[in-house]
Length: 179
Image 1 (cartoon, rainbow, N blue to C red):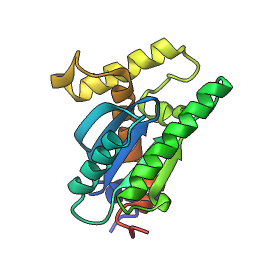
Image 2 (image 1 turned 60 degrees about the horizontal axis):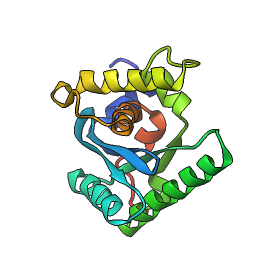
Image 3 (image 1 turned 45 degrees about the vertical axis):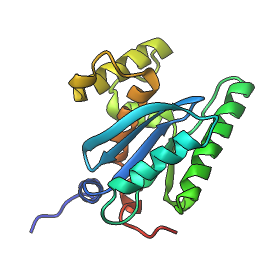
């Protein structure tokens, strides 16, 4: 029997789990991935609760064993009003998560630099437009049928979900208790 690294074990654990990755914004991109397979993705306005509740319920419905993990992009800088708005959006997603009976202990926060460094090799330090273009190209490469139909926030969420299924931190939560 060969020894395998912690990262390899984490990847194996993540293969069966469901992740809901969210690019938090007033129009949030979201992606639901079961293991490495992208199941659903989209964008929704976050000022109401209905759309958020529907997305979280969809993630739960995809989960056959255990409970999903929510991965939220964490605000990391910018103007104060932008940070406040992103924090409010984050709280709305967390409230939808809790309304579905899921615990905040099943939530992982990640700053864009971390997931982008893993998924968009070499994107660090490039301008916002260049990064958004790379996110779009990466998401479209995975989902060629959606080429020309993806929104920018949806593309970011698809890329973030790809990072999430390889994250040891996310893998540690998959298959765990609801609370």
